[in-house]
Length: 515
Image (cartoon, rainbow, N blue to C red; front, side):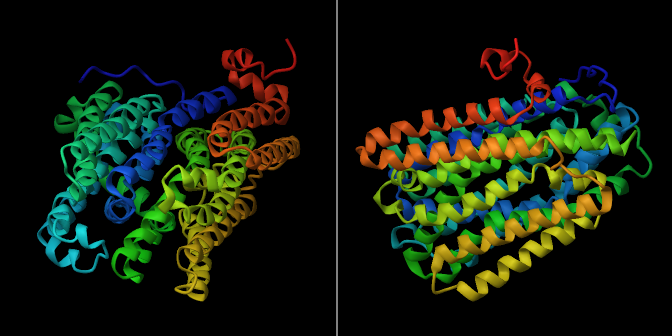
């Protein structure tokens, strides 16, 4: 565990291949989200939509609080570690992040566990979920420090360009173990608490695996016994606090809506509304994971490049945006045109999620077209710019929600969130271009967008025609249609020099037209 890690490559030696390989590894690591989406129908069928809605609300609360209480440490490591002069300073940054992030989260978890009976009084649930609710909240509160450790730990791995190790954490441990434990508890007759206990079990195992992986990329002997690096605690805190407001706002877009819907709608209706929104959010996250993969990669890579030559970010940023566009748009087209079929997989009760899915999918597609702009801005621009961009989107979302809620219910919430996400993404692109001269839409971006749009039209035509088929046949067409759209979008949307970054994979999939 404590073996000294291999010396990293030169920080400024970053190529298109690094971006593509890193994004591929990060995308694989985020495929845990795909497994999670696949698992959600099992959760709703085993525990019911109302109980799943309660689980969604509690996990959203944990995620929201963690994003505030960790003081921005996940983003801080992306800026500080790649610029560390030696291993001692890199480990000192990790130590600072763990102290700053875990102490508040652990304190809040203890307080929430004690206050569980009072918290339970304001959460709307089905009558069957009411008796064990306080116990469930008291237990689930401890997901907060566990999740904070996992988030900080995996961020530290990404800061060392170790994108691949997350695959084991996000897929094997976090998602598959959760599904196995939840199924076992359901078979044993555990109802309301089953999902909550399964989530805690998976987080505990993931945290243990994270420690081992950190030991492969950091000299953990320095974590407790290493020399004190003057100013590192303050430097790490400043790096995190500077992006904390934008991180909080981003998390509000994702996790606040189900909580608000639950509080606004009494009884089982509040839990059901949260569950429907949670389903739509999970499905739209399949588009979001493309943007997240490139954001995870471009954060540390842009930070490393900016240390030597800030102008060198432009070609990497433009390439990542082209690649994000050709990947995300066919996924979005498939999800939007098959929204009703996808919702139906969650059971008849979940049919209403299809209406919520369309505006969320549109917003996530726009985000993906804007590429990893937010991640680049966090490490390369002035510290307050991400706050301005995120706040503008939040204001638009709040105004839309105020005008539409409560009459339109979950649909209004989806529209409000979509409007805010689109505005925030647009402001980020504008700010990067205006303040830093970075423009990802220079040629050959037009080709990427046009070919992706054509692939989307073909996907939409196939999925609309498939409505004439029985549901099983139509559902079976979703994946091959998606994969075909992706292949066409990548093969014809990217220039040959862009496709060279795929290396052997590109040749295997015959993405390049030249030998």
